Length: 296
Image 1 (cartoon, rainbow, N blue to C red):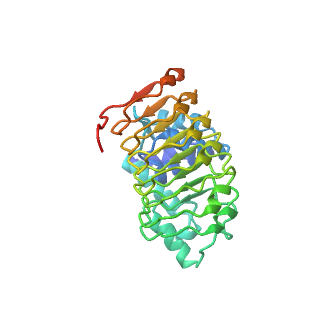
Image 2 (cartoon, one colour):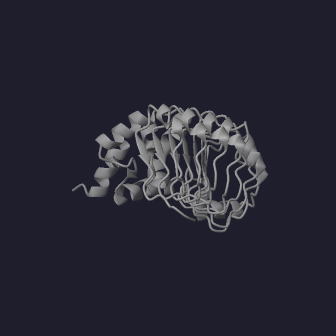
Image 3 (cartoon, one colour):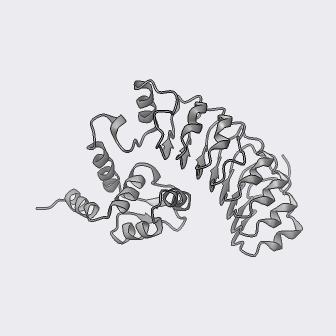
């Protein structure tokens, strides 16, 4: 008699190689994440994520919620993780590590504090690694790095300046860290997603943010942000701008230049008025200004 786990295994084995990779990425890393944040990474890896996601849904291996979050049943998640665990008994030789502490321990065991040993690395995920206090400047040597996830690294206060020269980086996720500054340079040509939610020590973003011509999502909700630079108007590819719960009081008129903007969240802020040219945003679908604060 075939049990549930065997049936799930059969469904997994029926997938093409690329679809298996997407399935494993989700099982390890992306459950509960907005699928729109993940798609750019898969595309840069030369996958066809829209097709893969559709097939995974048709086989009932994942679901995409109304809020675009990825859902996977616990049994499928465990199947994916056990599949990778069987690759090698040593975590350092597996294709994926799902817990930030495991990745940190691998680095410690190998006494690797620079990144020269990983020239082909495409994704570096150290999420919720509470002991991480710094990122070595040699990270700039990771010429193929697409995703850098430092979410929940609450001891991390500074990012290396060299990060701004990483031309291949597509997603930078630093939510819920103590980072105070963003090292944004013109070299970050491919960056599409920058997320710094709940970075309460982050009070401003540099004017150089305007050089991120391919940026599609800028999320700064509940950060310590107090103002936006005028150069924000140069982000002509921006689709989502999330400023929920920040200390911003005034919006630059250049917001009206963001012609591709579809989602604009300024709820629970201190903004007292909207730019007069907001009507230029012909693609805008969501404007949330609920719960405006009158005083600080």
